[in-house]
Length: 77
Image (cartoon, rainbow, N blue to C red; front, side):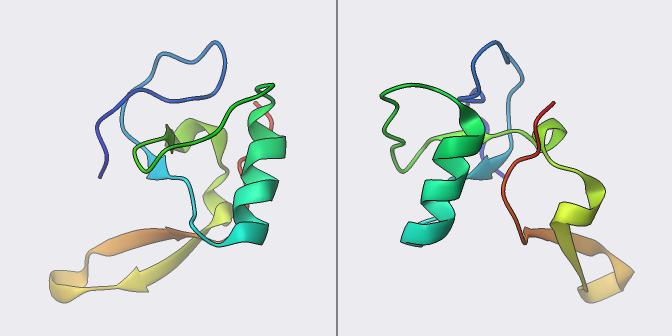
């Protein structure tokens, strides 16, 4: 998991999800972040608190642990 600071204005949390590389999803994330003129880098992240639990697709991995994969854009919090 990334360990940098969240790029959402006013948020000082660390760790989260990298911006998607797919163009359409990336555009939706940029709109949701609401940061004028912002161009995310390969290291730009949005922390988990800006997503709802249903934004994640759950999958089972070894030893019964779950990993999260984002299925949507950040939610307004």
